Length: 367
Image (cartoon, rainbow, N blue to C red; front, top):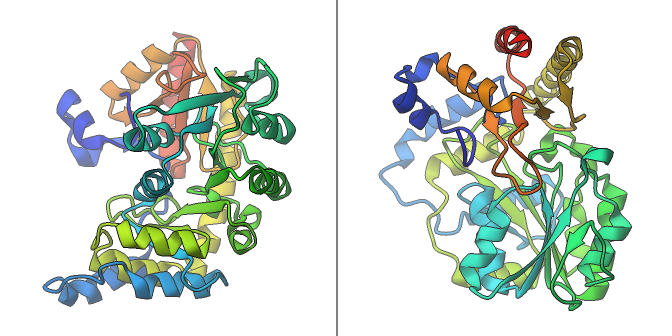
């Protein structure tokens, strides 16, 4: 399975395995599933369905601003964080962007859709240091600095937009808050918009830079509620923008992209502290279990701050095919720039599912 993870419908069509018999390790979704509070909110919100939602989810935006102690008018809600990746690209129309490799593919797609003459600078992450970002060399690349094997560029002109996925997808590597703020300060000085995608930041919440947007007119932070709260099918996310940019984007943004149920559920789950605490403890426990299993099987993995792992297996393509035949989906990472056919991304699932995965991998490691 290539492209984005989580396409269980296509997998079912290809394998003939029923949807409810497929185990999806290809999408990094909280294994606890939908919070009970969300299910109750959906039930109580059914009565809203005959009515249009708020055109721009203003009450939800205000709720989120209060929840995170953000400036009023700085939050824009969207149909998942992917919509919010396209909004600044369309509004700010960058001519030259900086993107790490490997990382989430939608950044370049979003910018290409708004500018057919886009120039891309690729900051190449290195396996030798676990695909970590060096802030100083990243800043150098952002400024259009000297030639380096870490990044590729056809001109020395500074970039006008840079993307940081933190924790990065698919590596799971976290750039600590102080390092992100160092890059953000350099972006402000260079007048380069820095878009920090924190789609998986709920798994390491202390490292967010969301409250720093108000101090930097060139910093934009995107968040997703679909990963941590297992709401991928509902589609809800938000972005925190400098106030002037937020106001200008709202004038161009399509209305009604956040439906009534997503609005209601978002307000509910953000206050569900019990679910958050249980999720973090579950993920910590299951990550320890998986890491022990990887090490026992001799599987090379990248230490991760998120709820997924990037693993390297020589027979990765056979592993992907054989697991799919048994209804176990994993993310083929061969289409990520900077990776090859030996890389797979595996989500952290329930103990029963993780045991099943390790059992299957044990047989494939010996094959």
